Image (cartoon, rainbow, N blue to C red):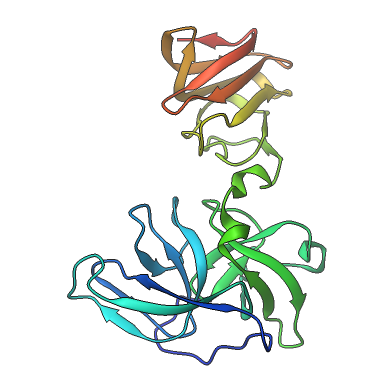
Length: 248
């Protein structure tokens, strides 16, 4: 699916929801029936798979602030509401995802099963006959989402590790450049462990590391069982334990 380009009728569970009003971001148009989120400055925008957004509810009216500054206009929205949205074709929400943790935003009209940038839409409650998804949307479901996002990932290609998974297991082919994004909140724990690979594997993972005051920007994992146990301190990943990883 694609983001909304026109108003749509809200399909919600009868009697659910609380009405709220919020300030709209600059240069932003919000369509009625779209899922909306607060950006990092606290203003409302159409929900998107953009790092840092927090879903708050469903717009109850169209507001066009494309020519206005931050907060120039307000929008009414429902929160704590179950709403019907589209299901993403590339990472579809399946039966196993119902009431099994969060589903994630693809755009302001679509949810997906896998976390792109960790923007939680809410909890999937049912899959309808027309293949749409009924999702419970509430800010309480999106705050602290990093704590219950998918816990384990296995990385086999030159790519970025997830900022949301608790454990990243790397298994490179040859020498591969990877990256570790910044943490999402102070105190976030992260473990990276090499579980194997082939052809003299080396995983070079770029990131902000700190070992008792010594800052480094690269971690080289050279063999199975190499491991880093980390904690985000707000500016860097503090190394709590290092098993045979070369930091430089």
